[in-house]
Length: 425
Image (cartoon, rainbow, N blue to C red; front, side):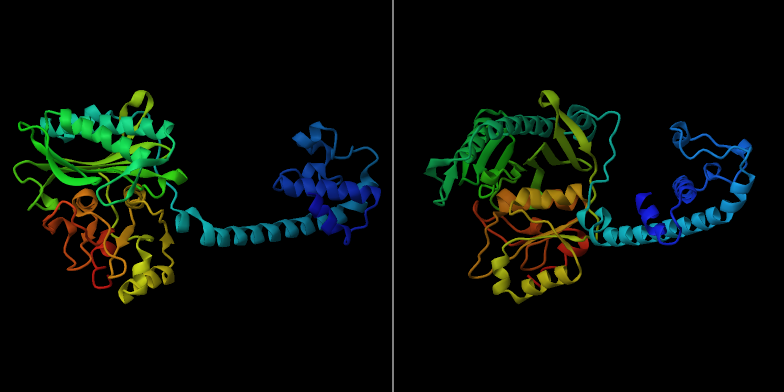
């Protein structure tokens, strides 16, 4: 209202009566034209309308007595003032609308930020209730419960332990962090004591270890993917692939997995897993109880989110450089943290996206087929996405596992993105 008064000053002489006039007109405009009774002389006194402004003793309509000459002299200026103020207000509203539209086009959630569209429910199913209906094999159900119990312990360990260098290194000579060792030890404790685990292997020590001759499953895990970013307090995760002992690991493919599971440790702890009819997300809630937060996740065939790993390879692989240029030219949104787990799991929460990690001579493959690519491949493909081995263009789930530490390139995500990428990679 102050702005309106300043703008109209140059057009209307601010005498005592005109000040009241402008104030009344401003009030009328501010109230959407419903308060004309507050402009002296425009409306008879008997038509006074109650409002918050009136209750403060301001801008009341003039009394009928002794006001006929005054009303006649100021009615026309009042109308002019209203018109002027109305024009100013309308102009400002049009400008504000244009600015809002431009801001939305440039920065709006629907265009670049991809905010969640999840709506709160009155209640959420427990994991026990969901698995009772969606996971028929009792041994697989038992394996899931044991794995999730270990991941609850990893969650707690991450909350209280500082990220420091451990005295030892892994088989590859990589420096291990304390949290790496803690997570790996917790999973080995599970594997060596569970009646369900026949053999197991960790990315930290990529050799197959027999654990229980009467067990049913072969476990392969990356205990804490994202070691290079965990000290930043960024999201990291545990990746687990589960094979049946009838196929074992060596000579099998990702398609032979019984199920796969990925747990993401961020502000919340969430687990993505394959059940009989699709991919589900479970969230760790109060009392360390898991609730179903997303069910039967579907990844859209199209996407506008990309996560490009191993960008060094773009210096040697022309196709990868062109692919990055394609994403930028077509205004894809970059969402890349350097952690495989959050960079792929966003495809389940945003229901779209593509992650690619090609290779070159100077930048060879880092992803392990059994520990990372195959478990994620099963999750993404069961959610309607596609994968590529980055070489033949075939699904990464078709690649035979010939050694425990086998590496591979990977493109994974929305079907119209993850599938056709291999010619570029």
